[in-house]
Length: 186
Image (cartoon, rainbow, N blue to C red; front, side, top):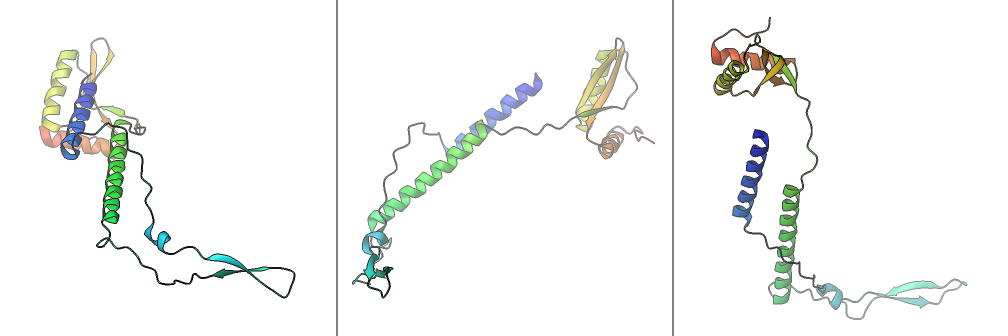
């Protein structure tokens, strides 16, 4: 239950942070994209294929160049419509990136599940209340996550999660340093 509350709280904080940094999202339908005319295509027409006579039975195609070879390219300083078009494209790109980030936040990929192993490092307690009190003090002192495991009625072990043998030794050393007790596994 505590993990669920933590997950929900963390998600709410992440969404609040995104709203503060990116602003309130606009949930209106996207406007249809306008066709942007290419100024170079308007100025320079494509070369036309022209059939040239040949000495054989096969006809060769020769590309004829237009008479006007001078191309005038519109620059952003001289064409205000081009500036507006570039700004509109930049806004569209920014909104797509924002939508992709929001989609990634609300629909994350599958989480990698790491199998947790638990290492019981203390002699069993006879009372669950005593074991929970011991765990609370150790968590306060060391910052390691512990679990009380009920072996059978009247037998409660205290354990911590580990990944490998090096992790066990590291956590036992942290417990020894924090409490002053010799916890090293000889």
